Image (cartoon, rainbow, N blue to C red; front, side, top):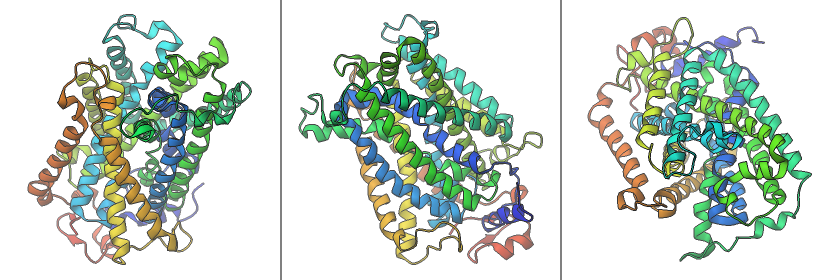
Length: 524
């Protein structure tokens, strides 16, 4: 229930950016938590890439889970501080703009937006890893044994999911929040049930995570293969910033968003880590190819049997669905935020909020179409899962760096001001946490983008441009985005007049450096 005067207080921070409130505030504490944890989505991530981690690192790949958590938790703490200070839509974009400058903000938003579109496609591909194992009826293309059967069928199933998330997001935040909340509740319930069922079927001790399964024969020994396998964990633990991206639709966001970010990543670490550990302890055998091809889906069917196992796989499908919905929702809010600043083509259209559904409809449709286009480009690519996933993760890590690096610079220069008393702040721990977050993000980005054949061109045909595909794609996106902003966009940026706060309110709350035009500029 909203306290008297609460909504006005929630909207107060918008004027600092020069915005007027347009999105309807209906999301409570659990909704914001659900947004963060559904983007991370324990069941989606662990089930989508367990096969990859096990194939490259054996059971010992499990240690990448706490490693990734430790690094990402530092990032999450920085984001929680930012969410308390700036609880606005398009969190990554607006945060980078505030702690850095207009160019850094635009580049962070651009990288995050492209990454989000790629991530929608990557998450939607998870349908293929689960549905055909529930029933062969869902293998519409061939019988699954042909060279391109799996990849092509994955695109068909993913397209259905993307169509669903597009329609739900276009019909308003209330419908999206209802589906998301119910889905997250079912996912958390299913996760706990799965942990219990795995626990009562254990056949070996936790020392299983010390076994490498004879992997690691390369030039760097097991370290090299472990770093490759860590992609499986890196894919899961991101997206916690989504809780803050819905800040303009949440109640008391400056308090709820930081809590939601921290709770989402902590819950994901504990529950996901237990699933992975107990799966390795309960599967009947660690030998054979099934763990390296069918992954956790095979473990569930092996341990629980066909009836209970398939029931659990349906829960995984629900998790994948709400995860794709959350990623799509976050991308829409980011596109809306950037368009409101006239920072995307056709900005006025993209920033228009439907008077009926109280949500930006145009971005929902356009982002859905772009995600489908990514799938179609990769329709006959046998490595579609790891390639699309890897590129999406790298761009998100880069977007995160475009927030944590300027934030660190602001701290070192004494310019960082946390939120007011009673709101989340790292205090004297802010500087060391921020330093670790930057070092972690840079190291993991380098690890993820490294042109390994095992990730980017594991199967024939072997071409140099496939192996270097992530470097080339991200180089073009980042370089092109940087040049576009510098030569074109920076001369146009500024809050569109139809989204601008009233001048009297704006002058009271905006920073002294803000420059009023017909619109309010964001160049620092």
